[in-house]
Image 1 (cartoon, chains in turn red, brown, yellow):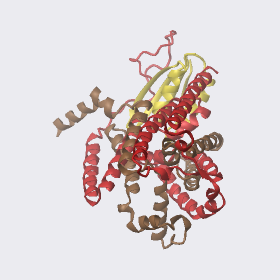
Image 2: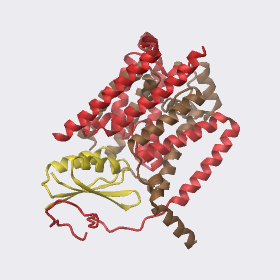
Image 3: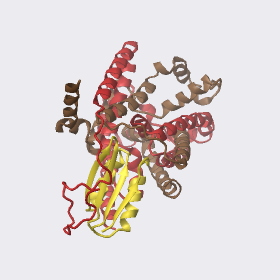
Image 4: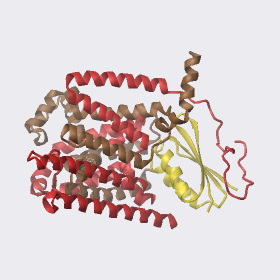
Length: 233
Length: 185
Length: 75
């Protein structure tokens, strides 16, 4: 509370002057609990790996995904919401970088299988496009902004101790069950009439990667220009 | 004990430690690390990363534990889906990964000494969490996934569906932002 | 010289940022805005936005997982 009036007209805040409204408290050191958690998850990982190697792999990569998401405050919700709401696009651009890098890696793996005449992995993620895609994505977009986190973001925030996201997760599960219940309707009327488009089938392998990276690059530039424009308003 | 405490406090305040465990990584660094994990996931498991499909199974297990049955539901009618349900939670790889995300975030927060239970502040947050959760759950089922499975993994798998999903989701986020500012702020 | 305090404790992204943006519009150059937050993402995006706008920013961790973002309006 020391000095709240600023007599310095140059407008620069010196780092020595603290203007916090509250006195500083000594902070807890949670590293021991963190290390204990690490010990427990490593043991669980070993036990799961003995059951099946895949269970152990999923468990450990899940922890790595959660760690990275939290450490970088990586938020897919913000990447979609902030351009419109706050004018910021730094997360949008980071997500585009992730898309570009992962596209290259995925295409390499997929092409490797294709070239050997083997079934291409991950093709279950190339799904039919129909009205259900658009309605579902639109609903999801509204939901994630209101609930303050998408699927991965909700899980990450549960780990950080947010009770609101615990509640959101419960209703995410309820909503999923509801969607699964109604799935037959959507499948019959819309999804079954939709078409799945795998870009290499249209443009060839090189062409598909090229077209996609070009589109990502264009979006990146648009996002950058958008942020500059919003910042000058 | 005091000696150990001093060492831990010294560790906490160490600049190199802070870089790795306390100060946020840049978004670009996050993007690079997530991409590496994604590529490793496809290479090892034959499928990209997905999150929300698992929640339908969680719902089904809870529903069955409460006495319901999903055996007649089209969504769970395939042999694969039935098998997953019968194998149970602890044998379900996707469930382990989702639990892992929670534990990984908890671990990261603890190592930064920033864990705190954040209570729900008001009724608006309860309503937002309920409606937001329901919309996400339902939307993800009919749209074949969330922003991980349908968007990130979809686009990276060179599927046009990922781009369409992203476009529709962008407009959803715009409407969501309007609602948020109007009703939940 | 005015000092404005926004209590955004318990509020999720993007509410702290939107509130700060709105408050900033009403403020004069040299005024100080203090935003109290406990949302770990706001602790990154709020200072990022303020720095981009050219304001002077300080972040202080006042308690476990509670921060005060102190922004001095510079333009």
